[in-house]
Amino acid sequence: MKKSISKILVAAIALLSFTACESQIKEAKTETVKIYGNCDMCKETIEKAGNVRKLAKVDWNTDTKIAAITYDAKQTNQDEILKRIALAGYDSDKFLAPDNVYSKLPECCQYKREAKSALKAEVVEGSNNKAQMDNMENHADHSKTAKEENQETNQLQPVFDYYFALKDALVKTDGNVASEKAKELAKAIQAVKMNKLGTDVHLVWMKVLEDLKEDSEHIAGTKDSKHQRDHFMSLSKNMYALIKVSKTTTPVYYQFCPMANDGKGANWLSKENAIKNPYYGSQMLTCGKTVETIQ
Image (cartoon, rainbow, N blue to C red; front, top):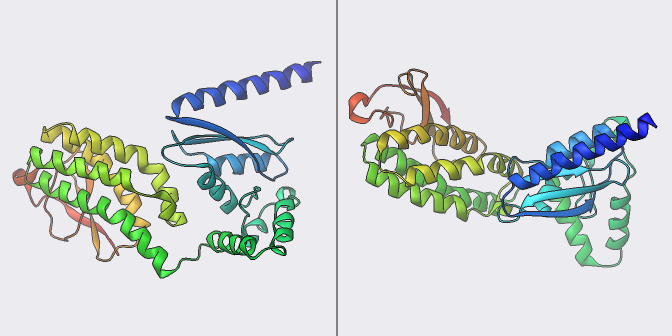
């Protein structure tokens, strides 16, 4: 009797937690899908792979193998979430995990690959299914053609370009131009098509997207250089994480000012190695140093 009550309480807490999370996700949409796995360790891995703060939440049931997926329908979709879960080693009825990833799962987590068997059975009947299978395997193996790499670069290049234009405006302490460049940056962020990004870039993009949007919108909404610079600090931190995993055609310099942020220091990105400080402008134009070259 005590065990039954305990299970009911755990289920109730999980439901409340999931409902609370759903309320934090904008444009929330919930769907259910089967994801193959065995145990609580699988549950932890599946949910960690699928969850993205403020964008997606996965709740997987170890008994039914059914996952409730809640996500922001304007920012992501079920396929993107299932791809991340597949790359963590877990099949769904839509996407298969790479064999080399599945084989590295702990022995207790190596489930019976029913979805893979079913998909191979369909392959025999039609070439379209085989093409779909090949495409998924290529995606899972992280292989990229030159065309795909160009698409990825083209998606993010406007984001980087407007960031650098914003930085230049702050170097000149020009709040009006900084506001305009931040508006363009916000539009460029919104225009990125996530399905054109490679796996590594996509995962980082999902983590930093909301913060990039928030900071660019705050900078766009004011002409006060001090307020703009406060948000430029966190904008630069997330832009650094994104540019580190992206293909860059020219070197990018990660620079540091020890005086910014009330003496705690702050970083920014630049296309040139010479220091031009966006946090103080002409007051301390050359204060700082290059701490990393990204190429």
